[in-house]
Length: 326
Ligand code: ACO
Image 1 (cartoon, rainbow, N blue to C red):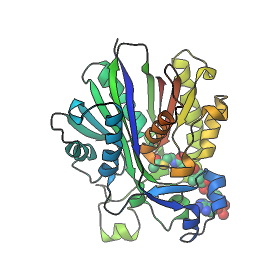
Image 2: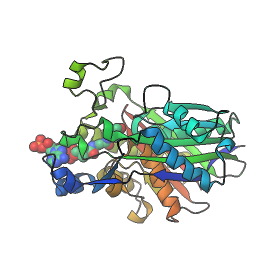
Image 3: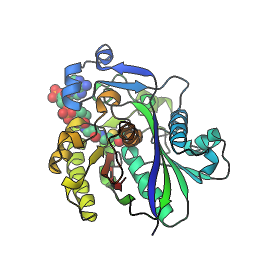
């Protein structure tokens, strides 16, 4: 049996740092409120000339370098994003072109913040069926362009960045052991970017209503996130016939430290088994899990044979998990 295995990781965040104190100057908020309610201290913001595919390219190059691969060794490019460069061509096509490869398929998927873990579900299935041998999967976002910098309820939460992985087949009993994806479209109105699509196309009216920006009912979203993540994490561990105590690391989506702590508590995981970098980057949506995974790998917190649980939650609503044996 062939399983998909992550053989390399890479990530990129833009240089510009916006701290909570910077935000205190533009909206009615405080460093204390943001840290206490979310765990975020600062976030990175893309430069004026940087789009999602540019961040993706920087992250992909690092992953390819770690894998000792050339772009031509890849046979499929998948990009998870809810902030594409444009509606089409896909961000994956822009990335494929930047990488200088023409022989692969390339497409985007959108499951908002769950996009990367949805992508793992897809890529893992494509490798298991031997439809593809070596897949480049990237989560990339420039959320700063769809953030209303006058809305304190959302502008303190988000940041920009990208994370990439290379997935290859293995016959060993390791790699992506199982994945779960779920959605509840009935709760879509809790987080949405309503303008600019075919429902409400770009118009002066649309812009006046600020529909080009993320709208979120934070508190209601928070409650659903805690409930669904606790459940999907526990079920994913059960699927693999292991006990939560056998997990070496939980790498959660970095949306809110309190959500992360609730999931960890439910699994009875001590702090040192939970990877957290939300204080540096905020919520980078589909980029959050692969950035955290890359940082965990490079910090030596992931070792051969470790059981690692990834989980994410986002607009849709969507949520997803993956159990890896490294
Ligand atoms: N600074 C100061 N006060 C604020 C701020 C701010 N930045 N934002 C909101 N407040 C105020 C509110 O106005 C409210 O005041 P009131 O009581 O006078 O009405 C009070 O703080 C409490 O607001 P809540 O929204 O109830 O605060 P909560 O504790 O729920 O925290 C937060 C808000 C951080 C957004 C939290 O609900 C959350 O993290 N939700 C989940 C987000 C998430 O997981 N999203 C999914 C991914 S996003 C994607 O897919 C793109």
